[in-house]
Image (cartoon, rainbow, N blue to C red; front, side, top):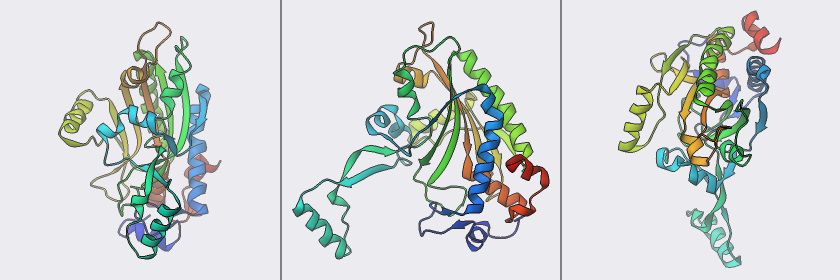
Length: 302
């Protein structure tokens, strides 16, 4: 159990994570990945019985759909775009000259039609809209993707690229709020099996600017977002490892998703920060998985 040590330094020293020279972008060891795999299987043991449709999106998404999502209005500070060279031989020569001279060569790059996905669920909603009206029972999805958020930090739990597993419920208000309450209960039970300290509290997303502060206050007042918090880097400011979100009709209106009764669909999701949960386990049970408590090892690996 790591209490007084510099947690990040120990992770790198023991090569559980490997420093790549960029804060928030470490390589993961085999030991770390085995914990991710175990946790992934544990999540499925809780949610697989609901028979969701499984989808795995790549870490990049359609730029036009990203723009329509409104993410840049709320979180411009977190977004990551993908640029590439699209020039002539002359432009290539200019690029190489700047590169060899230690100058900024990125002005030779142009935005592509893909951006980095900020959350596993963002590519989902337009694909659901294309299916037409929902069935009476709505739809349930099991998602996972690498995601990107530009917030470089020396906090090992605040990575710039990370994996997010999600269950997303789309349907009537009653269907999606029942789903979220079910996962609030399941989330507590699931994390109890891992024997780490946690608390669940109302939360808000990091909306940008003055208007963003109003949105954040509204989100908290309506209790639309809860987070399961585990102390990792700091006991005073624990880390959100699971989130439980009710989007109301935001995505249904945005993408034109309709219920079987031709009403605007509501959505909710539960998100699992895969790396964050793995880090919580190393923080509270030590750096050698062979020495973790037997019930925790059983929950992860059977």
